[in-house]
Length: 149
Image (cartoon, rainbow, N blue to C red; front, side):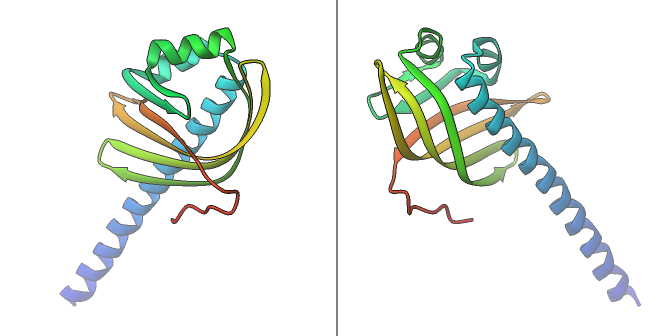
């Protein structure tokens, strides 16, 4: 009888953990989606709250920190008009999360319209009750690229 009870207890605990992870994964997917919209809307206030003070951003043309990224968005030197998210994967490691997005990004870069396929890697850390973005890296990929889940 004890082995059955222990097995059932283990199943319940694992199911609860899976449900919690799924809820956190959904929270991060929603946050990432919101971030793309805030970037399109040039919502500097929301982005400034989301980005960790020591965050880094890797683009095709360079790497910079939070203040530079916010200035680029604010001035429109890169205008993230629309991120068409094709696929998302999330991995959790305690209070750290990695979110991968495969996107088609429509942007205006230095006055020219550009459409580019990217896999974007976002790293988040939970501080108190909020997720803060530590890093965002754009990797240029073919449109056939897939994210392994």
